[in-house]
Image (cartoon, rainbow, N blue to C red; front, side, top):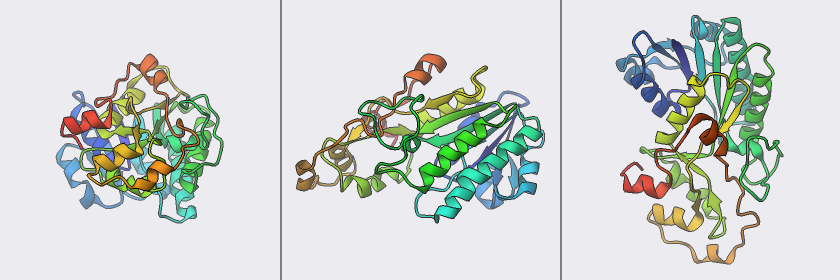
Length: 284
């Protein structure tokens, strides 16, 4: 089996690709598409086949998918980039990769997406059957481009597409946990943030990659327990501002993902059920 992985220099991909490489069976190949080969030296040393090129270059996409059996598209641009760039990478390039994969006879395509595509809350944990409702604190070009990519990839006739939606990802030296205070500074004390440790994201994506008969399915991948604003401050070793206790949380389930489907259908269990368990394991 030859699996192409994109986005392997980013926060999620750089932690997922080594795990995929570590689980190869004899004869399996992991190929990575990167813009700068020097940034893939660590993966090359682990046995990855490196293809240099831009996700937005059709010629590079053709080289990357040639002979591949599966694709895991982790590549994305996040906040802080122009809306046009978010659309170009997260939507247009993802769909072109899907088309190139279809033309090359790729059997499975895993699209890594975000729980932000749900938009506004529902007053309960969000399930994969919930439609996208644009709006809410975390909505923007990133979420909009991601939901468009999901829809257009799933509409490609003949391509087996599986969608994995991730919440706020953390752990293994990722600075995301410290960055969370940028948002938490405006939240109520009990407002919760859904999280997923990198060590749990990888096996979730591997289940999506390897499971038979799940084409067209969407799965939330997350820790068992969200974390509150107060806990985020304590995890970061920062004193909790008094004003957070004066704010109210309009929806205690905003952004909280249900993981019932992936647990029931694919037997998924997070490696670290909560951020506190990850801390105790020295995995932050």
